[in-house]
Amino acid sequence: MKIALLSLSFFFFLSCKEEKTRSLTPNAKNDSLSTVQEPDSIKNDSIKTIADIKKEYAVISGLVDSKKLDSTTFNYYCNEREGEVTLYYQNKKLKMVKDFYAEHSHFSSFTKYFVKDDQVFFIFNDETVWNFDEGGTPEKAETKDDIKEKRIYILQGKAVQCFEKNYSIRSKGNNQDPNSVPNRETKCDISEYMQQYERIMKNKNKKGDLGCL
Image 1 (cartoon, rainbow, N blue to C red):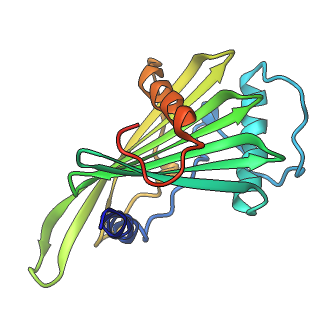
Image 2: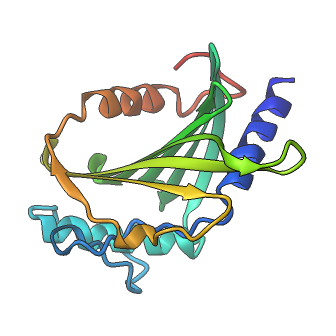
């Protein structure tokens, strides 16, 4: 029953967002992440600069998009939160973790952790709250998604630069291109994200559906 509810929840949120065209690549000059084609192999050098983070992000994103990484998935259920975690590997080495969950019917979130040498170096988070918008009819309601995106650059386990952008997408009407929405630099706090990441790591090899992580 829980699996069915989770599937319906995922389908619902994906349906609400199917018209969106959003990318991790913003137009802001101080926060651009290139997704140009990169080699399939990742060099074994350490990440020392923001430029290194952007390059490594491009490599891993390319591998995920082209389905060249192995993956495993598990589901978890905690109170009203229903989540799905997918872990991506290259040659048995973890490269990315995606944590998606939905709760309270009108809220969904996903966080992507980019990993190299067992260390998280970049985090992307998307939170979406949807509500019924003005206009429409009971038979054909109009909706509005309020979206918050966060980008966090991490060096040697410490967040060194963080950005946030907020925008809305309506089911009817002209919507602003999310890539044209400027990012604003914010104070960095990754404690909550990293606590969730650590919980995921502790449960990644368990079988079957889990409760609270």
